[in-house]
Amino acid sequence: MKVLITGAGGQLGYDLIRVLSGSHQVIAMTRAELDVADEAAVNTTFRQMKPQVVIHAAAYTNVDLAEQESDNAYTINSIGTRNVAMAAEELGAKLVHISTDYVFDGSKRTPYTETDRPNPLGVYGNSKLHAEKFVELISGQYFILRTSWLYGKNGSNFVTKMISLGQQKEELSVVADQFGSPTYTLDLARFIEHLMLTDRYGLYHVSNRGYCSRYAFAQAIFQALKWNHIRLVPISSSGFPAAAQRPEYSVFDDTAIRLNQLPRLRNWKDALNDFLHNDYVLEDKGDD
Image (cartoon, rainbow, N blue to C red):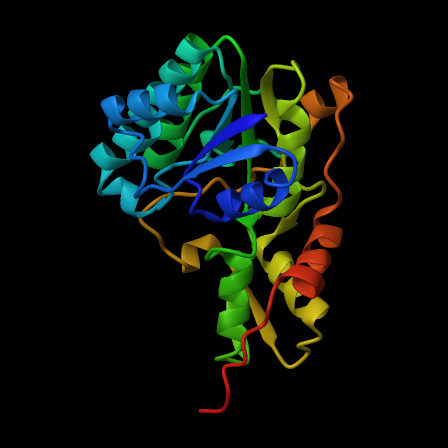
């Protein structure tokens, strides 16, 4: 199939290209190559390329800065998604839209299902929820994929940040009262390939199975690397102030995946170990 990826320069975009290039004609558009907020540019690109599937991974993702740059966040995430959805619908293309766990407030203490009511805490989550609504209103063939705590080979994320900090310090403070489902972008990309070939349209919660705190996530990273010299100190999120409030609990239940008899993602620990041992190249920082 001919697949157009927006935001192809990000970590999910990187793994989508890796997964899809072998079997599909991939048109990978980075932010520099296609500004999704530019309606005319989106329309021109789509009409020229004529994709059969559009994977919309472009987004404004700086959660804290979004509180100050709300216009920019809404323009890219909400209006940009409207532009993409309209252009895809004009061509009759399937649309895969990537959303986020930040559409929830985190007040629940059991895993979120697709039928739970969203209630974003900040600008980023609100802008992504608006994007979902545009997709639902405009597109006749859509998959909305909410995902969480992404990490992958090509990008800055919690895993790479922990490793970098662990190369500099022997004691790290990590938030212990935020819980979620870490998701390996390679696993997400493989699921997207499977899903886009179906007509099982709708809303999906897609993350590696199981959950942990940020603190337990860090523990698992250093245990997998056998960095036993690193001392982790659990702290509350109040001890790590940020401009934007995060959901304390954003664990996903993959109800829609199971109901549609689609392949479930593996456990988050298995995915993390695979990433660290088979995909991530540890840089030698040398001695200072």
